Image (cartoon, rainbow, N blue to C red; front, side):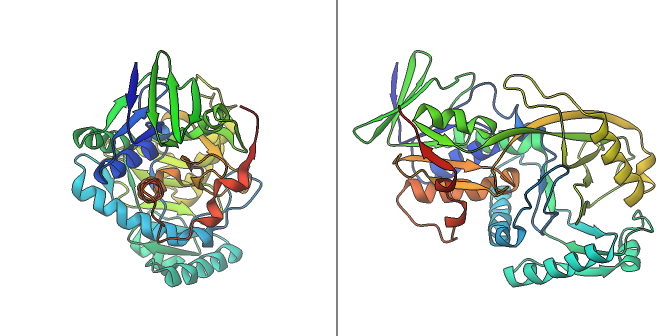
Length: 382
């Protein structure tokens, strides 16, 4: 079976969904292929935070620090796009509740002040509070908090709602979605890509690889070696009464986030490592990550630290050697685009917007040269 479209999107997670929607709204004929069911890998298992103010530079166990200052223009832009999507996509599950970033040491307080200066320069509103001011604003905070920054643009999106809502809207506006359709071949001839999946072929001048932890294997089918490493992170949830915590709380120096979702659960994230990544099964949970994450809550939000642990789960992500995002067209493989890495959930609307501009021959307003896939690529044989 042969199908001709303008763009094939490989991966139906949140980045794929946002990209399909943006492309469809720009007038492209789009087919989305997914190896299993949409939103069942990283996008559906993430904590779902929207990182608008700068966060910690290292998740637990991470070696290379994220250049967080460089990401701020992207965070401002994606914040605006999330608002636009919330007006045009039913059931997005967006909650712009605002968020506190807390500090417990003098060094961390200095980091708060420095990042506040960067945020102000980037046009992101944050306010620096003393420990007492922070506790007055959020009495749940513990006595170890020396200072905090408040950002009204912070928040989260419900991971089980956001990506599927965008994908449904893309389909409603003309895209086609093909679940349980793993790609088995990717070749190019006469400026057209042939995407093979089982007995079916999709032909398109542009292919977008947004397969998350499976981005590198997809690119390898086209003879491209991407220096990407899949890994798995761990999340937790605690019981709580409704409206116990109505903001997002994160730590400037440690991997830690907590907020309350629509089901009333306190959801803990922050990039704590799970067991080894598996290609087909969820990674195993790690007791040391559970203990470490819960110890943070007991210290930073003592009352919440006494809540009952409800659940622990893991989800895959893809990482780059420099821990920065990757987005753009691959040099030497015209018409093949990628996007993913750090902040993928937060940046999904932005990547969709930028990829749409690139596919249609435009130049993005934001300078994304530092995030080019070329830094991660070397050609192999077909």
